[in-house]
Structures are given as structure tokens and as C-alpha cells.
Length: 95
Image 1 (cartoon, rainbow, N blue to C red):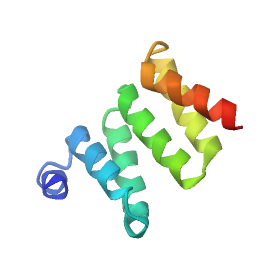
Image 2: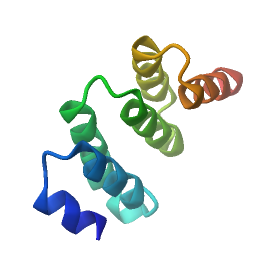
Image 3: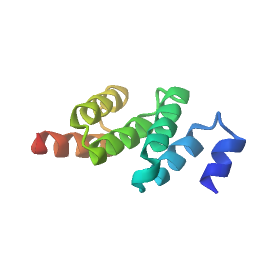
Image 4: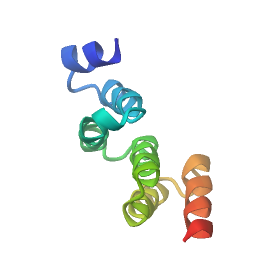
């Protein structure tokens, strides 16, 4: 259903972001997941939640530096964003 929503309303960042998150669960659709998450970020650059979702994706696939960069972007938009703070602490502890 998320895929259909993203297809029918491609300019709705929330559909693209949640579709990307769903796609990220499978190794076979990770490239498409990244594209959907990046599209959500492009559509709503000032939404820190989408940057966090992309950062979590990068963390999960082992791209720690990219994850940190997206976290930084989220925190620059909202320094008190709890998910961005948590993820940044986690990334720094693992680094």
C-alpha cells in the first residue's frame, strides 16, 4: 500500500519516506529504499525526521559516515530532535 501511495502521490514526502523505510527491510530492495528516502529528503529538506530515517538506513547498511552527516543535518534543523540525538550518540559510541 505504501508503494501505491508513493506512486499515486510522488510529491508527498511522508509516503516516500515510509515506503523507503519498508523497502529497507529487504536486501533486495535496498537501492530502491535509499532512492525513496532521498526523494523524501529532497521534497522536504527542512524536515529532520526524514534526515533521521535516511541516517538510520545508512547506519543499517554500514555507511557510518553518511549516517553521521544526515544526523548532523537533522540536528542543524532541530538541535533537540530526540531521534537525531539518540542516533548521533549511538554512531559516535560505535565509531
